[in-house]
Image 1 (cartoon, rainbow, N blue to C red):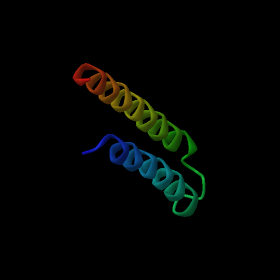
Image 2: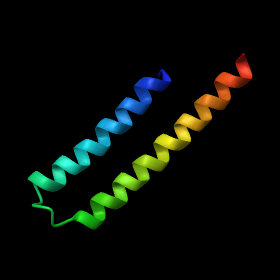
Image 3: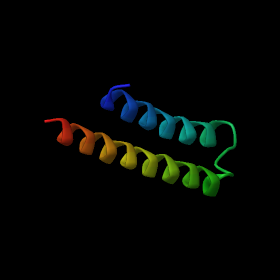
Image 4: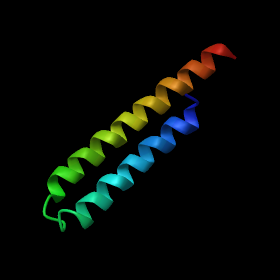
Amino acid sequence: MKEITGLYVILAAIFFVNLTNMTLFNNEWNGIAMLLNTGLFVAGTAYFLSSRDFIMKNK
């Protein structure tokens, strides 16, 4: 998977968590949604950093 596609998938997952929390749970699970979003953000950051290091090593 290319780097930009992976980051786009993680971004879409963050928006999906927010949309699900607002529509299905009426903002009652804000803490869980924030926890999931934080985990997805950390995963996206780690993915970006690892792919950036991989690209720099191959130049």
